[in-house]
Length: 458
Figure 1 (cartoon, rainbow, N blue to C red):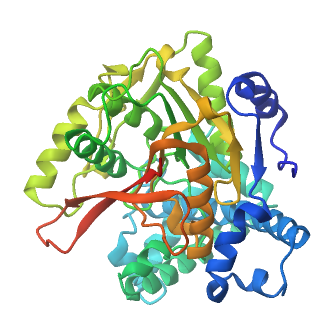
Figure 2: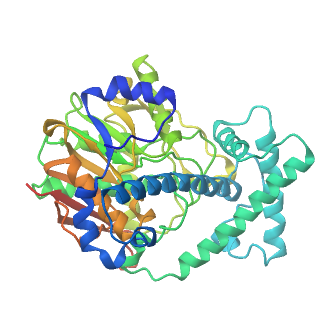
Figure 3: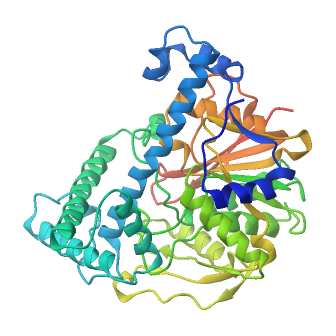
């Protein structure tokens, strides 16, 4: 089979010692495995694949590896989005107005918005150039330096400022394009041409908790039935696009939120649960590997749990979310003093949980692209549950169909895939739709969050 793309040596060595008991190897989906999807979607193949004419195993292998490289390169554009969100919403480095959506759309055409955008850019450049920046700002500085930027001279810093403002204009254009698009079934592929972002927040975790409860109530998910879980794209929370905040360091929260819900509902036993994160981002994988390594040394992992109180929502939804948020983490950790919310971010509420080391050690990162790769596992090592929230929206229908087939190949018969993106079922892939959990989040009943549940055919 094809070799995997290289990962940092520290992560590679970590994988070699930890994953040996779990997965034989990570392989690209073969031409034989992909043939039903290729044949069933002849009229909607990606242009590059269609241009190959008659497809054989050699052409397929070359194409899929090239596409994997291209997908991974989209992470750079996603990091640019995080950098723009830091410019728009950051509160630790400036006292300027935040660039909310109503200001974003006016950027370039309003002298007022242009003025405080320039001021924010000046302040952010100073923070990026400072000798001891916060962890999140340090990550953004490293990203810019790797792209060839410098902070040594006034001319260097002027180039960084121009880059920040150019990307603010790009985000404005993308936002206007997104707002103009119809929110029909195509919304589940809306970001297929955008950079892949690591942004995350707590809303999908709450939605998953609701879905778990409904699955348990209907008898579809049995007590103690979940032992092996995989999360596709767990995220690295830092200045997300909703109204991101930068007063705490980058962190990953979804793995612990999922474990917390499964344990609370009796669907998993904390003594034998295993959770794997599947991600193409080296930054995510190295972060999770580092957290796990610290846990083996007895060190806990503290996560902040901020949420945006100004998000439009119905009273019923708000009450249910707050009830979830107030107990979030109590099955996997203990409450600790949270980082105070800066006055400039008064719309955010925050609390913090210190995750116990023995829980953190349940989590293992794996570098893989679930669209084009799958874990080759033994039958008794297949997953009981795979989760992917706000991730498949970055792909088109053909790629989503490949992901559906790859995930089916990693699930045990009767195992579940949960996602808030609807995956196409044009071609049978071993998964059947079993439950849609609808969560009305606003006073407009047409605005509904949905968690789609698919079951591996027995």
